[in-house]
Length: 156
Image: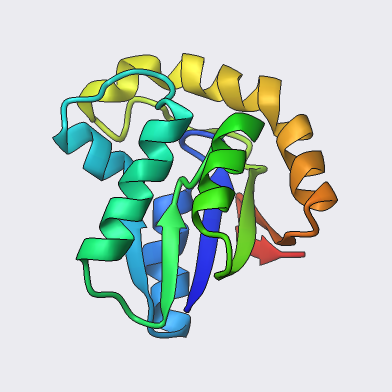
């Protein structure tokens, strides 16, 4: 089984990239982690690391998936990444790191209840992304950078 952890700043286009590109490129199953937590009533800024890892474990054990699974919004900081990667130990795991390079984004367009936390979520990413990236490099995790630009998505 191949697991792709898609990570990036809140509102950077992760779900759009999955729906309009990844799902068209190869057969895959997608776990939209944010949707699972919203269904459970979570509307905060950051999910506890162990709760996140346990949710992933539960979903992988109880659902049927294609040979490739995309974890949408897999983790936001080193603590979450460590818990998730420990849970996925032994799997073929890589990371797609989405970088938002668009000149303007309307944060009110999405219209979800948890959108009131967008600025806090974006700040969490800004404060933690450098350490997270270095952590993944140190763990020798394969990383593919994807840039969301005004002209579309570009892969590095």
